[in-house]
Image (cartoon, rainbow, N blue to C red; front, top):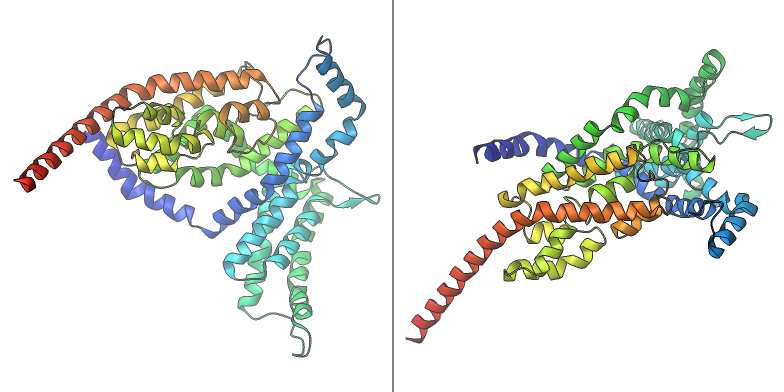
Length: 440
């Protein structure tokens, strides 16, 4: 118990306050919102990539499989066009969405900030050559550049506004026109900062700005795709959840650039007919690590349904359907799992065990790595199946993980159930005694 108390003091006095500050930091929120804005486009693009790569061998005897393979081969360019215009332009959506969110936080004109961010990103990532614009860094490879351009664009607008450096037009000018001219100085500022840096890198080092930035962030991406880093992030997320803080939002908000860079890299390799390489992606986190939500609590909701405790059985009925769709706040706060010392160990242990087993299953190619972005609310077996490009082994892996999760959660559930049954019996006895005393 002393270890538990010491750990809780560390979480409450150090980790939770730091996480709270990170979670409410305006730039982190803007980055998270930028990826949320891009999500619908990525989901649609991912689905089209899966359609273009049927889950059948070339020598399949299935009539449906042969037809699908034939259509995919004949119309590959047509089918994959939405993929290249969504996943292939991921960084464009992120640049606009991030700047839009950050500008709204500052009370600035969000639309013009988004457009300025887009201009800055295109200057840095897609210079024209021979009347053609390169698309190489508009996808996942340009994510970090998109975030930097978005933040710099908004901060430049804010800085100029703070010191009242703006183009003033007569009051008779319509407000919409006046607002558009207010952006003139920020546009000039971008031309004087981002563009010269891009030209310098191209002329002296034969590098585009996104390539240089990716080179700087490559160690972070490489470390982030290792098992120790994944386990550390899972541990922090669930420690925060135990303290009542939405750890998943905070941790995935920081990991989103790595998630999306890795997913885009895998998708690009599939489109080229090559083997995938990256393990840590958003679907990996959603469908293998957090089955049913943070803590991988779907099996716990199922256990609650048959509980002899009235309280747990009620929570099970209320939370099982949301848990199927990876929404488990009703269970975490209703049980409660939050701040519950009896359920503390499985809350940390279960998702870490899932992460270890899923990591090695993908790393050793027992299961295909994730190449598509399924909605995080998809039931885990289905979400894993879609994200792994119809690899049935992904769904089987989820079911195996759930069976293991059940075995880990069960003894702790039994202890907690026994505690609640005792409390409920004592409460019932007290109510009967009070009723008898009132009747007497």
